[in-house]
Image (cartoon, rainbow, N blue to C red; front, side, top):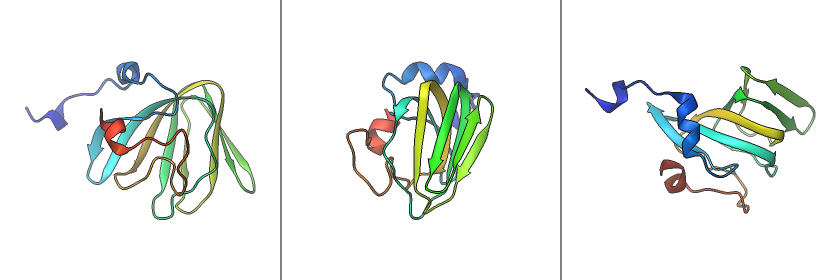
Length: 124
């Protein structure tokens, strides 16, 4: 059976995530990666000039701060941040998310910070 046809236990995949803000790729759908990440605290403000980014909260709560408003995402909710929109994810308590983004999406977009992770780190 093709590995792409195997079921993925998304909740079990979070065991691979040992550091906050360090996503792990769990699947690829065409030119999109499906990633899991654990968040706590704040990510730097950044944007992705050419890619949209979907945030889906599996456990906890996430606040997506945008320049002119904020979006509160409780467990089970998702939101797409359109390309070019500066955003600042904030998790007051540990939050588990699924990200869906184009394989070309740089982790921290237009900025390199202490939290930036390469795609190689995300694939491991």
